[in-house]
Image 1 (tube, chains in turn blue, red):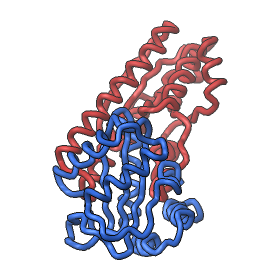
Image 2 (cartoon, chains in turn red, blue; image 1 turned 90 degrees about the horizontal axis):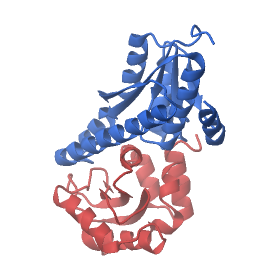
Image 3 (cartoon, helix red, strand yellow; image 1 turned 90 degrees about the vertical axis):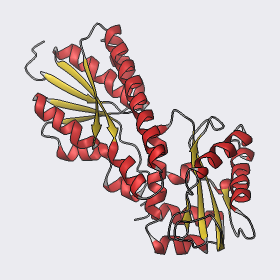
Length: 154
Length: 162
């Protein structure tokens, strides 16, 4: 329910392949900026990469959650990249990442930022949901699955 | 008006506009009933620990975000104190760390509060949220009545007329 408010159909990229970690972060940032959710592309990318430098956000189970608080955005916003074949996100289990959730918040949005990250981390613990998202055919289907994952249709 | 029905009110303040509306309502009620008013903000250590445990955060980041939450708390409690001062209403405030609902409920119980006031409970952000929203947990576990405040225009009118 709530992730659907910060990740829209316009900030979902399907069928990603042959992209490295930095290129993907840049691509997802472009989606956010092109859709009017971010004002400073370079600042956003710099903030995300600063965070990645402290430790990769490539988790287990094929999920990655690059994230940052950034003055380059004015509201809590997210993008989702889906790669059925997986990309190297320097994940902690060494396996390819299939779902890359980019979560950004302005500096003053701490509480909702934490809730958004917690919601994504919770999805990451549900292998069946990850599997369905990996093979979703359209942004609409992705949003529908996210709605189920978050309890909208239960 | 007698102070008997409401002697002590605890208002839970998080970093949201809804919490400030809860505070406005609490201030109006405290003035009308002559009740003592205590505002509490809780640094949510549980969610920070969960995100660290899930490896979403590195330790340095957790420390930074805990500091950000503390700053949010100080800022919002200061805003509540300002609202109280504008109406010449006495209020005590407190910033604590821990599990949010537990801290709020324990404080209210310890003070012998006759009412807890909280802001509007947001639409769940996740399935987990719908099972474990801090506001809902306060509603479930409180030993006294809990009032959730909705309708910002009505609340602001009430506060303005206090």
